[in-house]
Image (cartoon, rainbow, N blue to C red; front, side, top):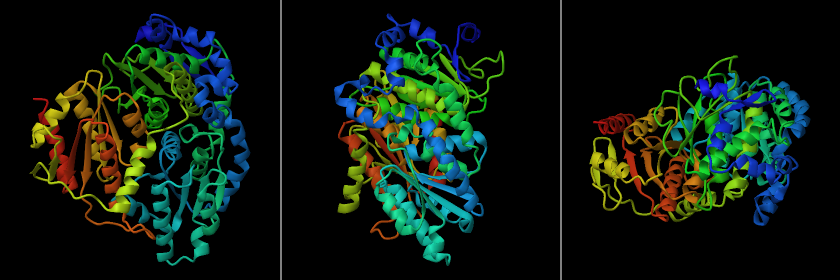
Length: 550
């Protein structure tokens, strides 16, 4: 780690990248020099839509606004000040949004220590808990770029009914909603019907690049975050974007690409404990959805802490991140990262967006589309319309777990787990996806480090349906080397979706089944475990995985 500090860091606008030059230098030819020779830094800063080829040009032209959206977002500041004053009595902020509409605000709130309830689930228990929390003081931010997100529409319906059931008039209920969406989206029209305040987002910025637009700023401003600071941090960093030298975003993008093209196509993202909380969850979508397509991609692996399993491997680039390294401090907080990125959150957002776009030029993919995201959505819609297919019989039932082993696998729990883990491809990964309550069933997240320790391989963890809006694109469009463990749970008390013929529990089950159907079409290894009693089933599953270490 001393070598990491001794090597020259690339720094600008308060953000420094350590180790990137060494990663690039380990390649047979410098990726960074090739990028410079192609004029990528200046062309990207100038929003050149031809960087990713002619087929991607139209989408890039419509999606490169993130390069300078932090400047346009300053126009929102007076409106946000008025909004926070007008709604000062509504001090419980609930953000109903998925993917790019919720991940950045959650990072901002966690990093600044401001309370924000993020509702990005269809789990009935989690939705019911949110509805029962300080309803009279709640303002719901409905955030959807397209305006058609099924989860957000369901949340809107549930909250509207809850406000009316609490005795509010329709006019009073409308005051409890703020809508963030693109101009002309269906949600803009719905907002007018509700009588809700609408804040229009930058239409030239895609969802996963929208951290410094209204999607990131509105809920955080309502939660008390000084959002102008984020714009200041991005502005200070933006001066480096067109440089050949002194360009941390270029250094980071070149390192990501150099590693990926040399076979290190997994990026372990680890917090260094210096003031940026949860950035890995936002980076997960940015990297996976931007690069995971056409059989290519960089797989982000969000690691809990510097001492958690799964940080290293022959196919892994280890990257630490933080916000406030003291002078002389060692990046990585005890681990030995290949690359360390340290700086304020506004600069982090812009640096990683730039680096992701740079890496995509090397990989030859369009960073602004998500061609496979709709697959699971379409399967879900079909299941809801047609009704669920006949439920197959479990291959075994052990305690509180029903085992649905794939053909050719042992039917018992331990045997099915060993079969799944033993079948990991060379250079493959295991994705754990949990359609559960990420608060009440939080122990499910312990599966990731346990399985990483057992396998010595890259293991990711995602809450369903949240991950469908992030790593779900990589699962279907990236390299087909993934194995999948899906965990579902019995719903004891369901919750209707007002105005729809299905409940939240039925929607959640359809989303899980839709994703299984999409993965089955790619013939990827998939083991489903259903918890008939969630708490007992999780404890049993954790014990079963732990026993595999023996």
